[in-house]
Image (cartoon, rainbow over all chains, first blue to last red; front, side):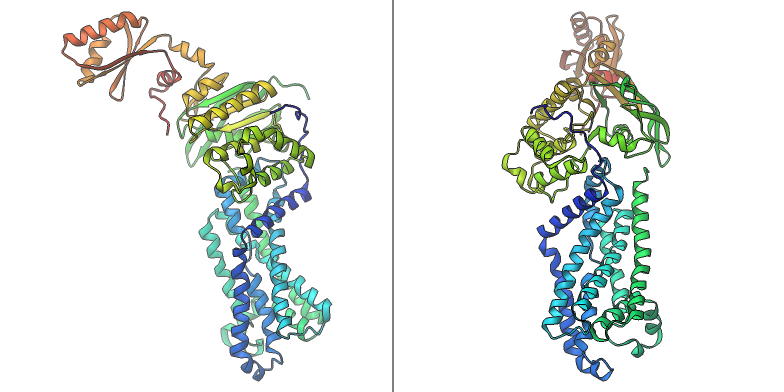
Length: 264
Length: 316
């Protein structure tokens, strides 16, 4: 080995360089494990097919003109809720690679945001596939191409903000089992809402829970983009619901990151 | 800033975990260009100390600096000056070796050309040929260790911290790592702080050795001076039975200065081994005690370890 590179002048690469380095690493990891994506594609397609096949006739009796359009946002929620690289983060913590990153001059927040950025790419890819499936089976967006793009953007935002929960658990516990258990959050968010019938047909405790479930407003907003047009109020509620979940989940995730960075 | 006399200087570092002192009032002064080794068994406080020096862990009390930069206040600067290979090769096993090194270089702000140059320079150390393009999870333990070492020096740090760099390696890979550590020190003047539980490693590599036990430095000097401090020849005696009686008999001999019972053997310290061997065998024969083995040997760091801690160093 020669010694002609003594003056490399190492320096912090900067926030954005670190962000893209971390995101690139995660995206490469995802591409190496395409099987990781299979459940995220099969589950929404399966539920979409089953729900439409079994409930389409019922749906027409409860005022949903196009039950496929009604179910497409549900497929999106099922596709993107809980998608994250949190288990990979746990692997990094357990293998010591996380410590290697911490003794480098990299930006600490880029460490987590890079993972989230990769998740956003994945969430947008999955959302695009689900929307394509919807278009293929005849779902039409009254809002046109702009509506499709807005639909994808909101789906992406939802998928992104939800990643905060598994990352918070990963950073807090460093345990794969605990991260896997965080998948349980997916069920109340995804099913205690208007997944199958419009809100006016929900009753009792389920109606009350759905009122407070942010996914209710997400589904309403996404359905509005397909069937109703540009309803600013509906879109504002959807944005507000996503922002609220984001505030909670990102506070937990970055709080857990700061906690882990504290030098015990 | 003014040139600092020491590459690493810490005073009274202390760290406690759940009421147990892991590091107890440790002070160190390590000169630039020195190889310093912490020698001690598992749980002695070696890794905890190194983690405090590399900014991963904060001391409960005490202070220190790395090339004059404060361990508490100047962590960002310190991270640019140091390279670290932790106890377990801390690698992302899903990446290829090449991707791993490139990413490591990018984190230190190196340009593409610099990274390429460094990978070429480090290739002889990594010594894995085409496997550099394969996922790290397919590498052997030795390949992973060498890659880990290469990653820790990709930015040519001023100070290299190695936490048990050869634990678990076979003799060939151990020798390769030793050669590289010596080269980094001799050719590049890199200051190296390493922890080890291998006596031979400390003896072969270190300019100075600090023996650490129960979180405290119990002896510190060059390996030669530490061995000289024992000041005597050693005879290792194994008797078939009645070790305690043999110890009593031998202790009474004027030529013997000390007898320690270690496991089933007696370690006899004497000013003159040639004189002592005859007297020991004669007195044991007189009491009908059978000698299984009797060997004379030079003082090792293990003997120093025994002298200062009361136990031999047990490695895994």
